[in-house]
Length: 348
Ligand code: DOR
Ligand code: ZN
Image 1 (cartoon, rainbow, N blue to C red):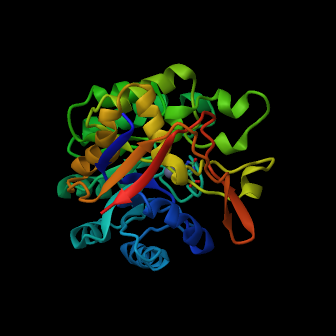
Image 2 (image 1 turned 90 degrees about the vertical axis):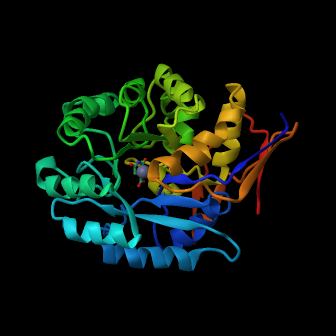
């Protein structure tokens, strides 16, 4: 197959940041994607409907002419989040989901949740109104090995929460393990999971072999090869519980290339070309549309996009800019470490 036309995709997990960074990275997503779930871990975080409304306005103001893109806003869950504010934002159509960061799990998660009991009234309200909860699925206790944090989260946090509140609609975000895939596949309702492009392409060797490679460091950290293969199988199977969330998370090079570098892979610019390569390698190009364009809207109760995206395979490898400029600084683009032969165009 040399050309493939799919419905325009959506990104169900995206970091756009703010200010100059927002202006520089937004076009990289809004060119190909129709909608994105916008992560609220700004400094300070987006904790109220009012803050989300003004963040949405800043995103729309930064959108290039001619780009048709809808930001789907989320609220950052804290132990003082007001269930009435959450419900009002959801009913207005301004807020699509709430994001749960276990405190300390990742970038700007200090205001996140330490004790799930404290957010129980918010979660109960969300279950009642059918509002999805996006979860960063890692425990943070220092005695748990970083490579086991997702599996331990599923066993000690997610499982019990779902038993006590089965009607809550959950998105287990950026699954990185076979344990995550197995758990989602063992459940028949109210659970979906996003998978990033980079976790389909790299394992932990990318970060650690031949020198330390900070641009492959993200959270949850990439795991060993058997986990990557489990993610590939889930993503390319067409199973409606799995959909694309790039977790494209830009940090400037000085913040990545540091003795204590930030977590995040900036994959927005080449995500669709990389995904076409992944699905081609696995003989599953016919499932790419489900993963990138259909399963996500179905889980969120939205229609798929009307516009389409055309992917074309060429013999020569495609070259991508290695970095984008952000003010005086640069942000490094995800290097998939294999040649990519797909070009991507949006058609009306
Ligand atoms: O790698 C990551 N970067 N994981 C996250 O959960 C947050 C993100 C960020 O905001 O930089
Ligand atoms: Zn993220």
